[in-house]
Length: 319
Image 1 (cartoon, rainbow, N blue to C red):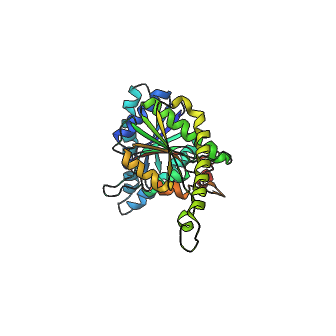
Image 2 (cartoon, rainbow, N blue to C red):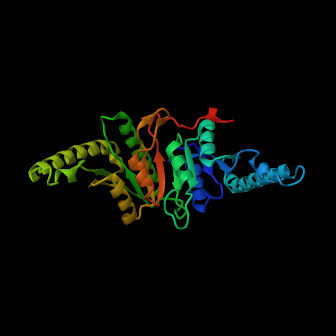
Image 3 (cartoon, helix red, strand yellow):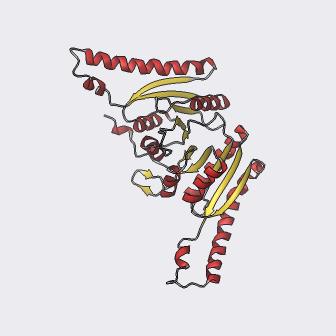
């Protein structure tokens, strides 16, 4: 995947896994990319010494320094096998809320991908708050791996919602397709491209109080399906060379329902999707459809922001 060159790999205890290191190694070697491994201490600088304030003399400060030294040694130990493979690796230990520190690191150093394992519990399949915050607010693509995934994908799904009249949405869909096809090609994986369409208020139109004739409803459905098909065909015309790798699915239904259902039924291990939402004072925020999908899937997710996205996290917020 000749795209990512400065990859930030999160290796705190809740995020690291064999799959993360295998994927990071593969990406670095395939792209001649630089890796930065970051471990994160959940607490602002000095917070640990305050926690240990009951200890006599300078003991609290000494214990804090020992804890930080442990994390530095740990991340260096994780980096060494990568360096032995000829991969350029930097390391850093960050203090503070994990998603904020990760985003600030991206802003300071221009990382083009964040790679981490999911913060999942044994009895909770959904992404937890730190991962969702990162997906919502990071300025670069975020790839969150299911801990059970392999180094290479086998079944990839690209969720698209083309609209040539919306330049931001159109560019985002093309980015999704570029990454999904590149990943499928390099992983020798199968790729499903799904576009869901539906007619808003179809059930209302069929209600007895509205009393719309069935032939009129069918005309509306046919017209919407035709327009949706044209938009999808226009998007896919730019990726004809990948036809042998993928199948294109144009499904009637609500995206927040049919995409998770397809992920489950087809054993999709990697979902590539955009996170386009409304605009606001800090840029784009994740849309309701994307949020619902992310809370209903348990596969790895590569989430992409639209061009022009501005993270609500700021470097000037630092104390």
